[in-house]
Length: 484
Image (cartoon, rainbow, N blue to C red; front, side, top):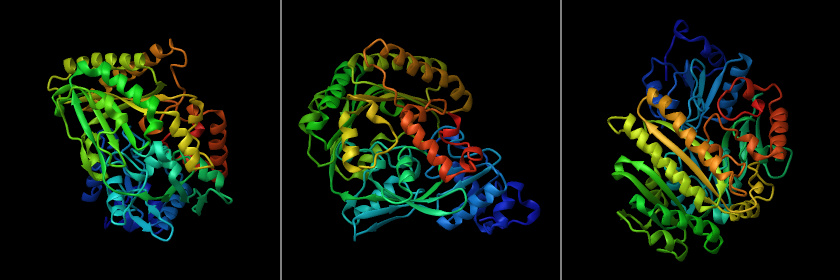
């Protein structure tokens, strides 16, 4: 930590120092500051705050928020630091509240629950819980952080068994804008806060501990397969059929990706599949497993091993957009076609070919909503009940090496999603209103997509728990209810 005299303190740090947090502050001149900036997964997020504060407890988070609010000091909140868009978890010239030291996972065998701090990463969560023969319905990628993933809803390998990750959270410890530390559970005076934290992002406070119900761990079967692009029509049929029939095998999951991935030799189709009961080559996945392959690495393994298969490389500028559409092969084929056209544009405009791009097709069967309700009777605020049938979540992405290339490529990714949406509108029920917070670009209308009743819930809770609007006025990152 910085050993700084008063002459070197930026004005943004003064309120924190006055509130007893001097030893928790990192300045741009500190080596640890540079290391924390570099640890952001996406280059787009590597902004330069005037300082960082690294609390080590909920009480220190409380002191930090009280100080920042009193000084009307803009701030950002970082948990795992995996959200890709600039300003989501970092800030230029303000204060970044870095929760990276709040990263523990503790198992309570008296009630088979796990206490997760927001700065932990899922690879470490699973490794710790595995010691006890338990796991949780968490992230599908090793480096993703706990906090942002759960507050955005969280799609998980176990969604067809237990619903969204947020539905498996049974208690939240939350630091509110006035510094009070409260617990939000399904019953009690904070039950409204408990619900809106399931998809409502950072509109209400800073969650310093998530308590999740655990489930038995064990080996799983899974991996990925690479395909030539000529299998795309059959790959699309496989994902559509899987989505329709997921209820017949809730232990299996899959997604089909059309991408340009230099590490895989260029333009490819990719199947990512798993069976959480360790059933090798389950019947429901036969359509995907029958696709001609360049290679596959399917095997029985630990969850931690399978996490690495869908990881995207760090230190790129990443552009993400998302869309939810009807489970209809023609829409997916159109998205694949548009992606391949975009990939050719990127190849032509990036001479060293150092980029990746993809569209992923992820099943969201109606089963997920049913299992969410079975796991969490209180409900969340995602609004997926609006989707009366099976749908597909599309993530469109491009990753490039420079900010100039990011600005050049961004409208191409956006145009892809816009054209898929326009195509899908010509099909009855082709476009679903829902936008997944964890995949969304900052310009997309996430909270609006949850539906008017959930917007009302979020707005009322934000007003109740943060009546001065600290998280609306001073914390610009995230999707804010005040912007609606």
